[in-house]
Image (cartoon, rainbow, N blue to C red; front, side, top):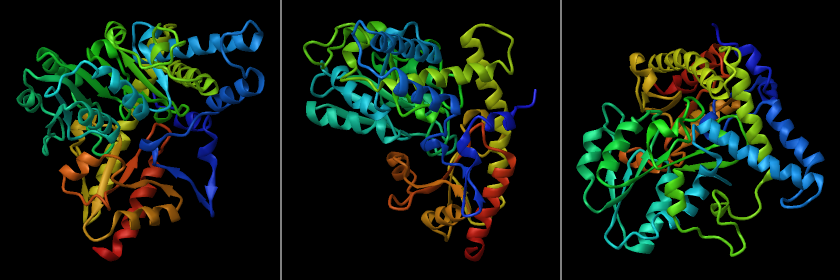
Length: 417
């Protein structure tokens, strides 16, 4: 079936906005997507009618208790977890990773090793560098292949040793868009006796996450990257989480996941999180007759992917026609399934900031800079103070918007070729 992009777009009020006579084109999605009305309404409804703290005997508090449980159950369903006990919800992926790094590494010994890939977002680098400094741990790096744009299994195997305790892997790069084979890499790391921590922030908006199939020990993502509120999700195997020491207040429950969730939750955002999962289910009903919620979410992702991949190839093909443009990532149309629709470019003579400004003036929203992909920026020899122009599609973008951004980049660089 044809993807109902017009119907989908009607659910997102932001897509109908304009600036200075230009209809907005949201191609800044890798940094955060827009939200459907249903998500914003869920947030507002909670704040206007049910705002309360947990643990009371009165209606709004009981409703809040139920909301928190449902949000964790919905997040577990979304990620393919065994139970809600495995999902920790917090401010952001980065804050959760910093928080859990103390627990994960608490029993590591000086000289033990953490392996980090060169394709990581800083959210899966900074926490480990800091805990390594604190505890006298060694950091080893696994490089990604400049031809395949992937972390190759042999490269990972080569940096592992008997001292490797943790391997930090990127599922999909927020710079190159490349999707790594996490299942294969996880097996190699675990065979060497290491835990595996996966950053799935960029993958989750575009591909179904199935933590049980992946086999990793931890996986983190952010709901505001997949049409939801500003929250981070961190999944961990229940037996692994249960064995970790929690850094928490004395009166906080020892139960999972509460022992790792510090402070009062953002209850209104948890309402929005459940509404986000429901958005995927509703979309899946357009492509599946199943009554199973997980099947509907899977159907929604398949519909989105079947729509986004040709659109990504159209974008890459158009960019390749512009003289002076270099694309950092997979460009082979037959390998589009190995990337998400995040495309980073540079021009031979036009600075990324200048291109981004020209696009902004035309109502086209993109990002420029290193975008916290600090290690891949340095690894690729890209000036850190300039970075790239990053164009990121979502399933609400259209062919017309792709044509518009290609034309705008062509015009912005025309006098510099």
